[in-house]
Length: 274
Image (cartoon, rainbow, N blue to C red; front, top):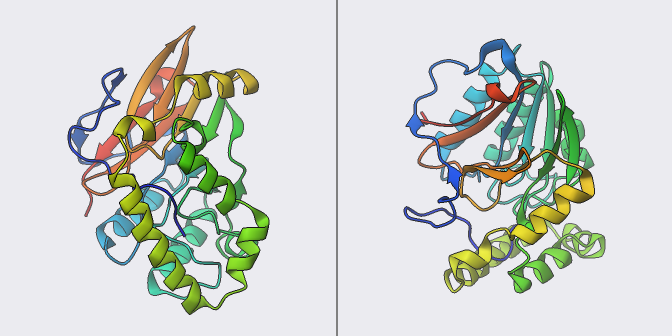
């Protein structure tokens, strides 16, 4: 399922001027070597139309073996998830890749606005841990707040109302009670509505607000916020030593964030896909 506004990033999108954007490169070795403690990624939007993205994701998982203790996927791993009984070839291939990665690293998956129907069966079959949004983790001396990021887009009132409905347990139960074919049809309709809604909104309204970010970081005592959703990858310096790192969406390239115990080891990277 998905809802309320396409987030496909376009050349010239605003929102990056205040942050440092990395250059495109091909990932030929694991940056940081053994200094990498955690790997972060989001917004892959995997489906049958982007096999190069799924192949790139599998390559990253393979390269992480023995290097990254924790892998965090912060939402929108897939373009749409209609339930844990999804038997599509892409879904089955995804389960296999995550299951293999979970044998070597702790893999954590957070719901996004496309895959909020990931459930307990999915976690059991893949070996991943489902994370609440937001979640705070400790990496070295830093308290790191993790989120998909859409909850911080408080300027988009329509989106937030839809988000509350789609995250409602009652709404989700009613959807999952339908047949798989009915859910796929519903998802296709919601995707069409999402694209239409996003086309009529100003770019700025679909970005996070400074107030929502500051409030969340203060509430959790966080030194660093890592999120996705907006498709505006950058490293933002917030003052007082605090930072906000935005993950990129996969398509033209893949994006990963590598965090070590020492902040100087941090790397936000884009790399060519197969």
